[in-house]
Length: 462
Image (tube, rainbow, N blue to C red; front, side, top):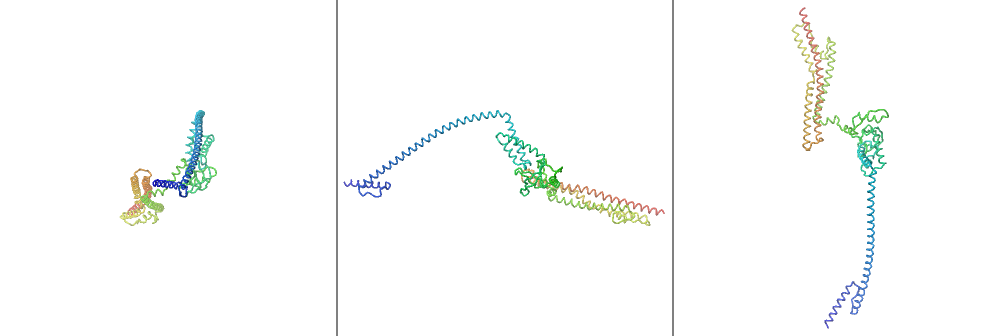
C-alpha cells in the first residue's frame, strides 16, 4: 500500500512538472489532485483548440497553394500557346524575308555592283579628304565618306547626291586660290582667327607665314620653321594682291616638300655639325682670305703705281717698286766700263728687295690649299668613327643613328674643299699679278743697264 502511494505521488510529480513545462500556460502549481486533474483537463482542451486552428490554417494554405498552382498551370499553357504562335509567326516572317531578299536581289540587278563600287570610292575618297588642306575650309566631309564606306546598308539617293557634290567641290576647289577666315594654331599652341590664302590643296599662308594642315585636329598650323625670305616675301605679296598675276610658291606634294625644305639645315647649322675640325678649317680659310684680300689690294695699287711710273721714267718716285728700282740705279757717264757690273748688281739687289713684298702670303696660301683637304679628311675619319661607334652601341644599322656621323664626315670634307678650291684660284691670281710687276721691273732694269753700257761705250769711242 505504501508502495502504491509512492507510485501515485511520483506520477503526480511528473504530471505537475509536465504542466509547468507547457509553455507557461498555468502560473501556479496544483495544490491537490483535484486541481491537478482540472489543470490537465484544461490543458488538453486548449491543445485541441490550438491543433484545430493549425489544421484550419494548413487547409487554408493548401487551398491557396492549390489555387496558385492552377493559376501557374493556366499561365504556362497560355505561354506555350503564345510561344507556338510566335514560332509560327517567326517561321512565316523568315520565309517572307527570304522571299523579299530574293525579290530585292532580282530587282537590284547591277545596282549591287554599283553600291559596292560606291562604298569603295567613298573609302578611298575619305582618305584623300582627310589629308586635303581644303578640309580646313569644309570640315566633316571625311566623316561622311567614312561612315558611308563602312555602312552595310544601301546608300540612299540624298547620300549619293552629296557624294557627287563633295567630289565636284573638291575638284573645283583644287583649281581655286581662295581667301578664307579661319582659326590658325600658333607656335605656342593657341588658336587665333586669321585671314588665310589657300592655293588649291597645295599650300596655304597667313600673314606672310606658311601653314601646314593637321588632319587629326582638322586645322591649319604655322610651320615651326619658315622657308627663306624670298618665299615669305612671295607669300606676303600674294596675300596683298587684289588682281593680276603674282609670283607664289606651290608645293605639288601638298605640303610634304615644303615640310622637308624647311627642315633642311641652314649654313650655320651645317657648320656646327662639322664640330671642332670644321671650325679649324674655317679659321684657316678666313685667315687665308684676309691675307689674300690684303695682298690683292696691295698688288693692285702697286701695279697702278708702276703703270703711272712707266709714263714718266725721267722722274722716278719712291712710292712704287719701279721708282725705287730706278732710284737705286743712277748712271754716271764719268764712270769706267767696269762700273757696269756694279750697276747690274745694284739693279738686281733693288729688284730682289721688291720681290718679297710682291709675293707676300703666297706661301701661306699654298699651305692653306694643301691643308684644307687634309683637315677635311681628318673630319671624315672622325665622322666615320662616330658612325661605327653608333652601330656598335645600338647593334643595328639604323640610318637615323648613322646620320650624325656621316653628316659630320661629309661636312668636314665639303668645308675642306670649299676652303682649298677658292684659295687655289686666288693664289694663282695673286701669283700672276706679282709676276707681271716683277717682269716689268726686270724689263726696265735690264733696259737701263743696256742703255748705260751703250752710253759708256760711246764715251770711250769719243
